[in-house]
Length: 426
Image (cartoon, rainbow, N blue to C red; front, side, top):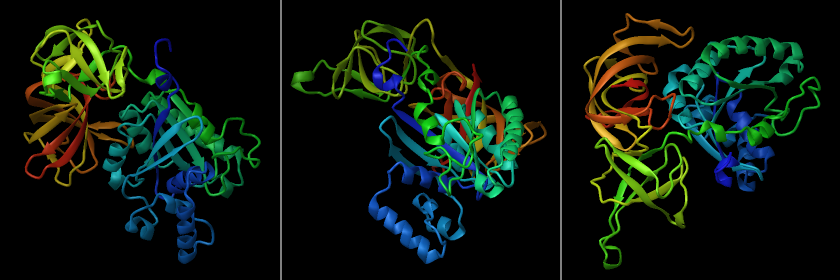
């Protein structure tokens, strides 16, 4: 894309979320990626080998590279979200190994909220399950742009093309209903390494790339919103030194669009206009700033700009409002009830909010709406209407995942009780 710096255009960092039913092999798959891409230190490998022998596994259990909690190792399941980093000469990766069981839906929402790509595993022996539908739905709800359906344990079905084709047909019908545009199906065996890093000789009928090749080459440049300028102000920098007594900068992370010196901008919610004078970074000044870059903006006018304000283009502003329609995933043991009061955190803004009503609860297995529901329990998803105590500067989540998301906090316990995705505001 013209005008995009090399590190953005190349998609240097890919954030991945993995999901699947219990025992579908998520942890083994990630362990295989780490092992076969030479991203495991020798002492880690020795520890896994000794632990595998002590457990009597009879093989090098690569799942132990990611199952870090003692409870996970004892039960053989993933409970917490485990983040793993590895890289190849072409790209860097951060993998969120999210739990498979329904009771840990909140963990998956947390782990997948910033993902560029989601890997949903399906056990070839068992085929599509309710958990497969749940994870595909959550991937679409979180607007993860790319989905890989990894049909695992193909070695246990004699590498059958017929089994693979049947799963592809069934999942394809479902994801079409969810509106997921980019879906890739890969047959593999994480235990044996088939089609993980290297192509499998056991499945000559599969003409696509192995998983790692796909991860290295998937294009994410177009996933970022380079049209709508969005810059939430996180910090006002005033050095108060003799050398910099006139310096006043606004630090934050670009959430959308392209910023450059001389550009006219509007500060919301005040509506004051100014122009960008310069863009500072730790490495010096820049001629442009792009999404996910952390920079400091200097403006031509000394305006009253503070944390929580948002800088945008005057011709393309977000909505400033106190009333939100949103989809939320409830994360707390104590159920959501209408008229509940919470703290709301949106980008760098903070306010208080009241949930006026619950429009409906979603059955994630059928996508049916239960309009008779009067509460949301832990891990349940629904549409709500809420009001905030102060104006919020927002976009629909479908337009911008950063300015379209928020969390709700129980002020009495300081627990995060909900993650929300904005549908509309006024």
